[in-house]
Amino acid sequence: MDIALHYAKKLDNQDILNRYRDEFYLLPDIMYMDGNSLGLLSKRAELSLLSILDSWKKYGIDGWTQGEHPWYYFSETLSEMCAPLVGAMKEEVMITGSTTTNLHQLVASFYRPEGKRTKILVDELNFPSDLYAISSQLLLHGYNPEEHMKFVKSRDGNTLIEEDIIESMTDDIALIVLPSVLYRSGQILNLKALTKAAHERNIIIGFDLCHSIGSIPHYVDDWNVDFAFWCNYKHLNGGPGAVGGLFVNRKHFGQKPGLAGWFGSHKEKQFDLETEMSPAPDAGAYQIGTPNILSAAPLYGSLQMFAEVGIEAIREKSLKLTDYMMYLIKEELRDFHFKIANPVDHEERGGHIYLVHEEAARICKALKEHQVIPDFRSPNGIRLAPVALYNSFEDVWNTVQILKKIMTEETYKKYENKRDVVA
Ligand SMILES: Cc1ncc(COP(=O)(O)O)c(C=O)c1O
Ligand SMILES: Nc1c(O)cccc1C(=O)C[C@H](N)C(=O)O
Image 1 (tube, helix red, strand yellow):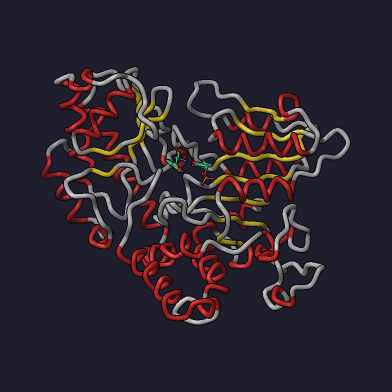
Image 2 (cartoon, rainbow, N blue to C red):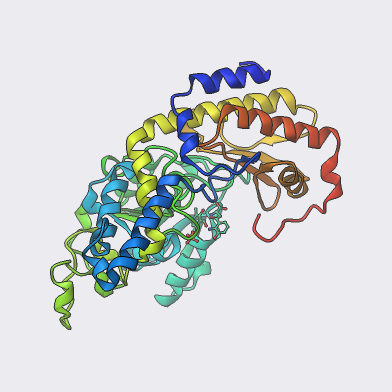
């Protein structure tokens, strides 16, 4: 590798995904490094949203069965497109709800405390919404979360050790919920090994795929994962608040979902409107109410690109981008006390870089003023996500140069070292 700009340009020339940049509305003159929080709008996503609006305009209520994407089958259409990204059959995937509501649904369905097995195993680094949801589910069961939510602790504050997780799978655990990729450090957990260990101990296990979906391949069927859930607005570019997704392993089909609603019905029975529900035979049963069609619409266009490119090619470029970024950070920022706190090994590194620095909050503010969009994660982290479909190696080069300038000129000292409202 080389620190010169011409090397970044050479990498861009060799990049087979470079042409996808034109598919997106890139922010002019901005290095957008936040696609792991909210992915950018693509032209195809915009078109699919417009097409759905057009059906509403032309058909009114009949848009459920007419138009380019009849709404009544739209969730199933998207689920089929998403299934290869999780490594599951189309029947096992459902595009529905949100990350947090899907987690509620799955805990309501798979948490079956019995005898001494009453606890839910989580980790202290997971995104707090998951912990809040699980805690409230324990309360609904009449359990005190302080006693019944067991935390795997991090030794370094950024990552988890597989043996520590497995050691915590004791015989009082009824359910395990862990992330696939940690939202701060970007560490990938070994889903296959953790699922095997959980099953050897007769524990049901599910994963939050928010930070891995659309960024790294998954093989949840081969790994025999029980369930998973995710959002579609980060790497999958579905738009703010896009409808989320869930996976239920087919071995659990037939079991009653914890939270029922009429959209979980068998599609041919739903409009019989009977008092007794006839659930869908597959993951469709985990839907609750009317799908948010307008918040699902952009996903159609976006997922077309993932089908075209393939998740393996995306992962390959993503690793090249983060390898290059780490190289430049080491070369160019060595005097400025940044700690690269994401794992370095490819097997353990997700789609973003995580820099720890005492002044992280105000460095992020300075970056934003200087055409780089990172995000700050409390207490002292800077996340930088160069995304395979729309970021270039030149974006990475520019980002590191701007960071170097901010540090050299100490521009960041103009700001208060405190987070803004969102990041
Ligand atoms: C890992 C993880 N889990 C859960 C959530 C919450 O998702 P939502 O607000 O879509 O329910 C997020 C992000 O907001 C996340 O990153
Ligand atoms: N869901 C978000 C939102 O509604 C506003 C701003 C950011 C988000 C995020 O997704 C944050 C993200 N889960 C994270 O990993 O930090």
